[in-house]
Length: 162
Ligand SMILES: CC(C)(COP(=O)(O)OP(=O)(O)OC[C@H]1O[C@@H](n2cnc3c(N)ncnc32)[C@H](O)[C@@H]1OP(=O)(O)O)[C@@H](O)C(=O)NCCC(=O)NCCS
Image (cartoon, rainbow, N blue to C red; front, side):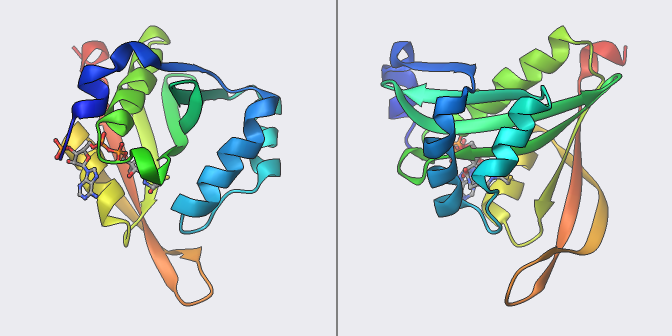
């Protein structure tokens, strides 16, 4: 997999807080990459809920996003995605590492997420990063064709377990 983008133009790649005027771009990417896309309203709700909402920009173009919610020392990554045209170039890992760094600053001990068991790309992505599966929620995602199980995955932030 080419890492050209992240290695050669890192100075043009940055992550910042999501703003209201990002939501059209974010919802457009969302519709093109997710099995069950979130609506623009759902992203708006996350902004209003004061979740940690970030966008990743590539040459100032919105190219990815991630949303984190925290309760005490636990965090849940509610969503992460990279625009299709930028996938496979290290940006997802860069954004996920940023999320983990945010968690470390907040003394979070574990980062949780759920992913469709049919989403082998994302499962591989999470496993490669160090997430481990700890539970299955049967028939959790309802698509028009089938019910899909959710894998619940966890990443321990080791510094706080020692
Ligand atoms: C999952 C996702 C965020 C990964 O982002 P990305 O920028 O494409 O991933 P990266 O380029 O940083 O890849 C990091 C690692 O993930 C794995 N990976 C990424 N794409 C993969 C693919 N198509 N197939 C298998 N493994 C893949 C690899 O292990 C890769 O490491 P490597 O390049 O050293 O082999 C992105 O593919 C995406 O947005 N998918 C659609 C939305 C989604 O499913 N989100 C997760 C559920 S909410």
